[in-house]
Length: 75
Image 1 (spheres, helix red, strand yellow):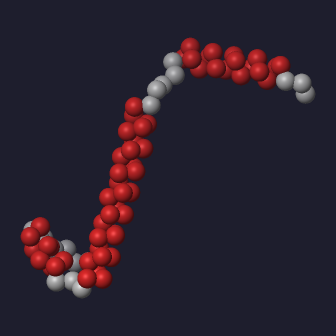
Image 2: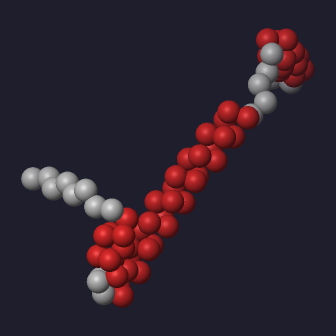
Image 3: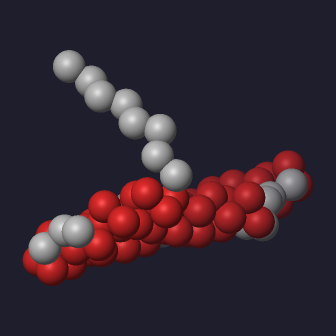
């Protein structure tokens, strides 16, 4: 069974103020955790979107350098 309510912010705030102090603290921790989680996701997404990218020449140069290093190692 699912119950959906359409409440305005002020109504939610009044309900929260009626909660015992311990429940308010639990609610605050839960909301802070959710906000921090979303911030981490947004930070990671921003990192991916703004990260430098390699051109095909960069990739080829890296592969050549890697091949040369692998060849120079004594087996």
